[in-house]
Image (cartoon, rainbow, N blue to C red):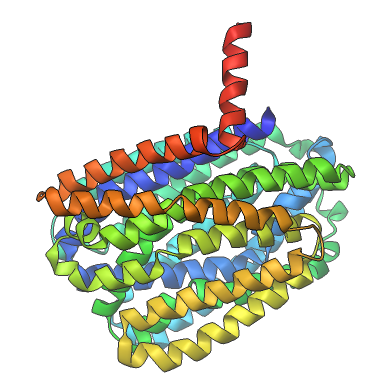
Length: 482
């Protein structure tokens, strides 16, 4: 029951992550234009790259350690304090490096005001504490807190960004909202931890360094291909290319975020099951997650590839025509990254195979760097899209290879091809309504409604017993008891 609640709140959070940008991003794209959207995404990617480095592996390690210590409030306070101090020290050190970049690098110095606010945004991310609240299964708190912050952000966008000259306000708002977020977190921390037992003398920072170092190397290598793509495009091409590429990738990452929320919510439960020795329950939970992610991601990929022109024209306008092909190229990332989440950050991380994750990430890093320098200077945004697609595919294949040593994957292949077969009717739906519905928005809505209808029929009527039908049966049984 606890896992289902966590999934519900995390998916609710991820849905808001999709819906809110669908409100603000088209407005920003049309108000600021490709070049200013490009420089904003360049600055945001640069700041988030530093956030990844300063995290030192904590997004994975912190969740694991907090989940282990959750039942002992004194130990939990000590564990949190040690990990937070390490994170704060890393942030302080890297903020100095960030400042040097702003002064010394021409592309950053040309936008000194924007990047100075981006530096403030980076520093304040140490107070986000997502790793702590995830480890404590506080997904309801995370969802409510984030909903409030995002509502404030939407209001601020329409109030403070009115023309192309207001693009710096984007990061001013981010800094202000980060301060509000820190206040929310501080209040919640006070309720969950026992700071009366805190003592600097009892802190053991060193014991975290070795396991975090391995995860830091992993996070660093992942960050090279996950965040550096936009940064390299900014250096090797131009801000306009960044605008087209980042806009396409952002649209796909909205859906990736929703699906990843399922994996994130299940991770603390998986860690707990594995360390309790309940391997059968562990394997069953992973299979259920796999089924849900594959069945949802495959239709999404097909829909985005076939309807990319309509999506771009409706959301961003004809000025972003160059984002159509990158959107189509990167659409398979919805499926690929979902699979990586299962095989890498569910199975391998839960069973403590951090070295296997590191090797997979290193493969991705080398492929990303080589392809970026080969493709981006000439193909620009399309080269960046091909680079991230092939990189994530290579990482996913490596994760699958290492996972096969931990659990059997025989049933997974059957599920994959079942869902692949179910895509055929979607093609007919798209072709039919593209032919007969002339209006862009109406066309997308009709395709969406009929695709959803086919999804329900295929999952609940045609296929044998699965996760969806089992969940519906539980709901019906629960209603009958009430």
